[in-house]
Amino acid sequence: MHTQKIKNNVIVDESMMKAYLLDYWRSSGYISSSTLVINELTFVGLSRRIDLALVKDGELIGIEIKSELDTLKRLDGQLEEYAAYFDKIYVFTTEKHYERSREIATRSEGILVLKNNSIKTMRRGRKQPIRDRRSFIKMMRATDLYHLVRKNGVKPSSMERKSLENFASKLPLYSLREAAIEQLKKRFTKHSDRFWANVDSNIYPLDIMELKKSECKKLTASRDDSVSSMIKNGNFHKILNTQ
Image (cartoon, rainbow, N blue to C red; front, side, top):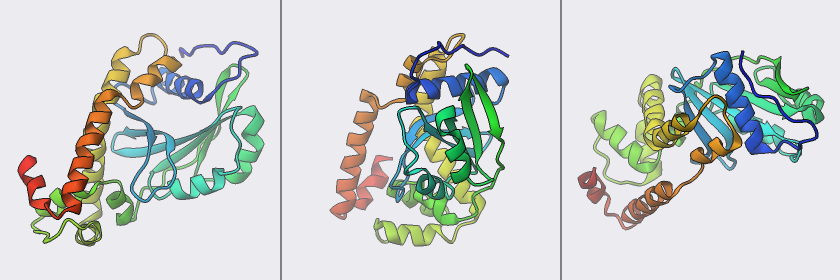
């Protein structure tokens, strides 16, 4: 198995840990260039950003990272909130935080530790598929929900999110999962592909920069703001014409 070594006496920050973990998983065959990698993902209604998210074979995987520079004050609340949005969750931490992480994390959450220049799986955790329709609904933006319910034969009279969520909540769970994952792919595939294209023999912290917000994302955000304004002003019919 091919993994890079970590130099002694180096304080490993979050970006370094992201790189080491992705490098480790890639070299072990757990992930590949077909895996969608998302940096710092936030969903509607989620007050926190998870450090890394993966979409792998239709499975949603979340990774919370605790480096030497972090504390564990918020970990219990973070894991409780993330549990609604991911099929499997991992905590990736250092030796410094391992014992406390083990106490906080449930048996469902995997724990990996950066130890002696390598990554060790201390708890494998287990997959718990998302069963709540609301979780998938909150992964989607209002425009995504609008087009989803129209695709399923419903013609909303409003772009008001609560109304759209009500329509979407009546759809089959598998349809919501497919739609939510498809929207994630539309939003993040470009950045994930650019990340994988830049990866050479190892994954380095600099490679993680390809997953961070870019000028392209700013333009997308600007367009989304315009869409939000259209919704706020009641001009939701214009959205359909722009698609």
